[in-house]
Length: 105
Image (cartoon, rainbow, N blue to C red; front, top):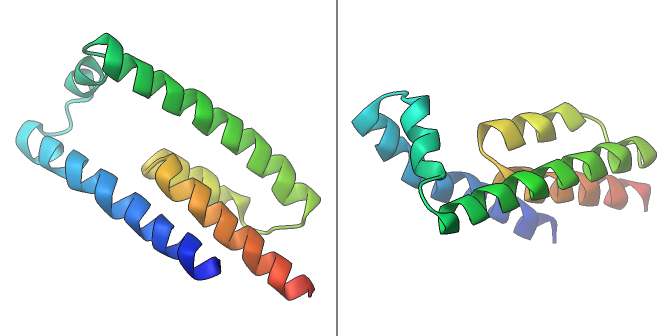
């Protein structure tokens, strides 16, 4: 499973960035336009809010789980979530967690 988590972390970085990089190339770092388009209609608002709530829930859970299971470097999960999103941070955390589990056996 560890290879699958790592592959998903890679895909979870490359695919979202393949959409956002062209936006920033075209518009520069226009955060106001970014948020205007992110919340442009009810469908995009639905996905944006769903992702924010899911990210917060995941970060809370992974933080407590990392402390309980003594998984080092939780800050990398927070950074991954802030710099890319849940598509990187979730499989990256599952990779780190499975690596710790395999060391325990």
